[in-house]
Length: 93
Image (cartoon, one colour):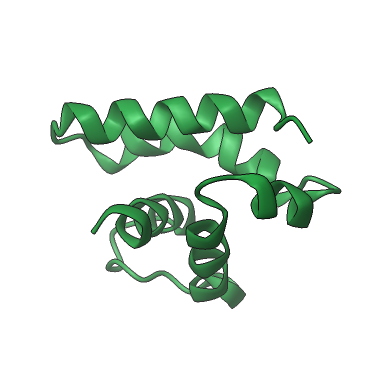
């Protein structure tokens, strides 16, 4: 299976974000990542995508930790922002 363009784009975005190591605001992080993450969350073949994608296991873990609207990283972040930070932290830290 060839991963959909939004997954390929998200992979590039993650690589570029980690490579830059520059601080960004939660709103900037959400703007960079959320559209593609949301497409994965709503993909009819999400399980197949996550099985093939190099960050699939971290994505699944992030999704499970954010079940029922849980926010892991403080009350000043939106659920979406917490999800993004979780994905990056579970994969790289």
